[in-house]
Amino acid sequence: MTIKIKKVAVIGTGVIGTGWIIRLLAHGMKVWAYDINIKQKKILIAEIHRTWPYIKKLFNKKSKNLKNLIFVTSIKNAVKEVDFIQECAPENEKLKIKIIKEISLYAKFESIISSSSSGLLPSIIQSKCKNPKRLVIGHPFNPVYLLPLVEIVPGGKTSKKIINRTSIFYKSLSMIPLTLKKELPGYLSDRLQEALWREALHIINDGFATTDDLDKAIIHGPGMRWSIMGTFLTFHLAGGQNGMRHMLKQFGPALKLPWTKLKAPKLSKKLSQKIIKGTKDQSKGKSISEIANIRDNYLIDLLKIRKRYEKKISNDNN
Ligand code: NAD
Image 1 (tube, rainbow, N blue to C red):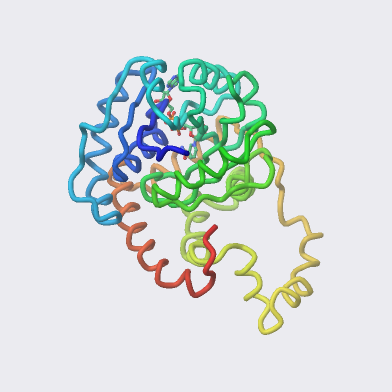
Image 2 (cartoon, rainbow, N blue to C red):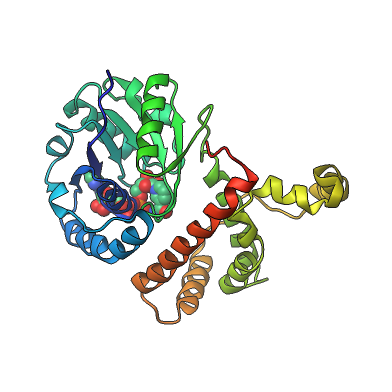
């Protein structure tokens, strides 16, 4: 019989680890947290307090139970009792291999280890894992406590049973797991985001637009459609009554035009400064937390609106 997962460890409590912890606490999990930097504890607690009003709104959660959060000072103490471990250390292949190995040595033999990596290959990061069949990628999206998508990516040695259990577990956290058939660098969502990011960096580097222009080019147009339909269904509608067939006929030839430059530009000091200054100007003196509060309120309203419409388009969220 498979046990219901109720005890979870989060390794690394930066932006993503914190997001996972908030979502886990919101769903009644007992969480053991570890970060190499003990100062992260204070930041984590402050972020739990900042976000709880949103948790209340979205998940109907009345009060937060901080007793369910145990901040420990070693990987061993974080993982030894739990059934699921969410690894959230920095995106560095060597570091992930090392941490996953350490987690696997101290964790129960059958506990699931899921890495939050944004694009590393699970086959590589499971290479030194004890019992590697229990290693998967569970790639979330920031803010993890609000956004439902999590990409589950199997490595060469990951078992089907673990993939299924991971998917069931994430569903129990009100998430929408998307299981990939095979691993690929950058998985699905970040492949798409990265293409846009590279294009945007070229446009800035070549002096055609500011960071603000490029953000407006998304938020007032394509971004609004993307939150209900992805690229393909959107383009299907762009083809009029003949849908994708006509869209391909009309815009297919543009694929041969030099519209994209997908090779990334060099991240020079000048380009970095342009982007940093651009986003600072766009923030208009607001702190990161102030902007995050605006984003979180917006996302909660959007999630409620989406619920009303998404079932009309597709009854299948898996
Ligand atoms: P971050 O820099 O905010 O946090 C990383 C945390 O790991 C830090 O608090 C750091 O002190 C801690 N850490 C470093 N070495 C450690 C060790 N040996 N043991 C334990 N903790 C250690 O990074 P992040 O943005 O939270 O990213 C974490 C992971 O999540 C990465 O793999 C990243 O690719 C992935 N991810 C990030 C985002 C995002 O938008 N930021 C989205 C999805 C996935």
